[in-house]
Length: 155
Length: 344
Image 1 (tube, each protein chain N blue to C red):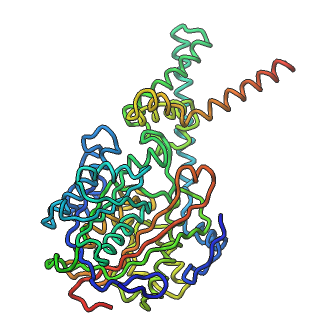
Image 2: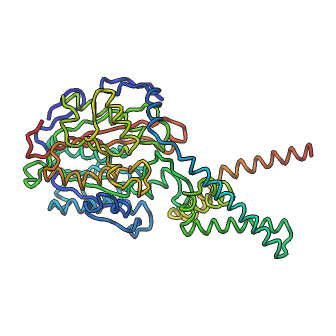
Image 3: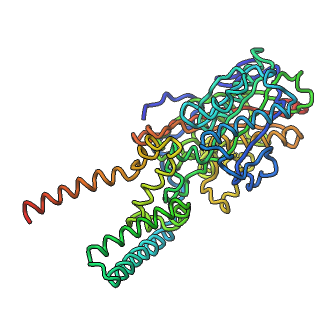
């Protein structure tokens, strides 16, 4: 921050003192409520994933295919709920519970695609689709490459 | 016009507010002031294909309605001062391009209503215009996509976050002789200085803006040698809950008590708890709609006699936030009075 020239009517308080005052005046997130809700919603999504895996296995899919189908089903459902406008209402309650699982990733791709459609299919939908998920892809893929390299050398 | 003290301009003509209008969205119309707005839109898109067009249309309607209420045609208005939150102020330029009124774009973030009203009254006072308009707008959906995240993104808002109002307000200022029916006069303006006490959280703009409001209010009170108790209402906009608390604390440190006198547009526009707007409303349109509905109406009726309208703006951008900068803020003050009262 640039140092300000003090004029006579400026409130008589230093940025440090004001920072403390502002912190006291700003209510924190109600974590006694948000953390249990995130746990319940996140846990439920994982249970749903397990149930789907068992269902696909029972239908005769081999294990890797069944696991893949679970991801596809969860992504598809999140995308559909986002497009229908329900996902954000659920996420408002669930918080990290819907953000952390694969459902959050699907929502972070579909929501900008919907939002920026008004700027056209190329610059809008296409260009902005990964505006939130982009960093996850960049660092996720890089981390995977590093992990693969480590595995290849020592594995 | 005379300059009093360091920052205040006192008008001798006392420009009149001839007419005003407010246009709001559905959530705003369900708030405590719902019945005072001129036009309410249940559909936030206003039937347009983009949120930006919808916001532009809010401004068009606010100006047209204010002109109609004042019995004016666009050609009777010599200047229009307008601004909004969108990049390059496109809500104003696109919304007002059809009117053919000489246009001066303004940017003061959420202080824009006070800035445009101050400029319009300054033009009328100086004789540059006999009639000038001030208008601003904001739209929840257009602001979210520019400043935050897509509407359907599943995120949580922090308790200190404020809700950008879908609203527009317009006021028409004229020389008093042209507004015999109006009882609202503009006595003083006090344009603020940029203030920054180091707040970085873009989800806590009330805290960022409270020092600017305090600074401008203290300048004005010192320049005019008045106290908060000399006013019926000190209307800030939009500090919300956190910023209002902080403003009151800052003034208390200077030995002044604002309780019962200060209210905030962001706290008046919504039922804060039931409508889930966290710390309150914000956006240029929030204080504009509150001013151009209940407050001007009560001034006109004489229920309020002396009002200080202090628009507060957080002068940040998505880029400055991403670069980790602190939030510089501004507050502009317009002193309004009922003309049938002896002035201070």
